[in-house]
Image (cartoon, rainbow, N blue to C red; front, side, top):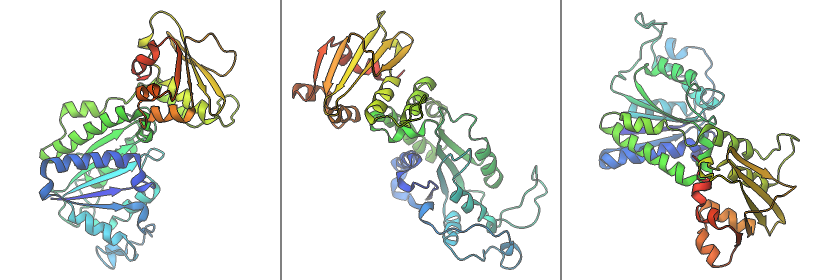
Length: 345
């Protein structure tokens, strides 16, 4: 079986969506690796020029475009593939520009004659594509994929057939590049891998579909992290220090369910950059203080480099504490139950 991956991200293999696509491919391989031939097209590396709208591929050279570029390879691979995985991030509610150019250039695959039984008009395929299968895999920067892919589904429905493709659309896509959140994102990637295994045998199950549609984090937490990630103060419009960005994103992960009837004050003292912050852990959420500090419940005195390495998983927090790479003063409850406090909901 021939599998084609069309990666339409301008970031190529550094794409967040590409991580999901490779997890899906792993799932395909887990069921029948020996019989699978897998090829990739990195759209950002291809020379693809815009369609001229000349219709020469219909009138003068049927099935062949007059433009000499890499689109010839794309068309050959589309005909070769039994399964095509369309991988792309959502750009302004549709596909990235260069991928849209590629889709425009698929005109030679259609015949010029009107398809009388098409609901809103259309053109029949020049080739027998009846046994081809397709999966659209995409991430977007909103908290949910729901309601943001209408134009994508409509466009692909016109040239692939409304019921001829599966979709894996994931909101909160930027989180897949954040090492500190890898426990949650890796869990989601395991769901995508399961989807690939199921798809090869028949279709994605309802249980797996439900897992794929579950938010990585609740809307409030994600949008707080997303806003902080830009590193810009909402009030002043000025760039924030990287340590403050880090603290705001950490505070956004605060799990209100960990509240035990009393407000706690977590103080972070980054000794290598001479920066100090407090995070108020309250019943209704968290708050970051940069001045007018309160009496701390717990103080973590640490180089910022050490704490960021712990957060990203490069260092084990317990081992680093034993080695005196940082120290803790006050109530140890927060440090002992860190995942309860900052694991999201």
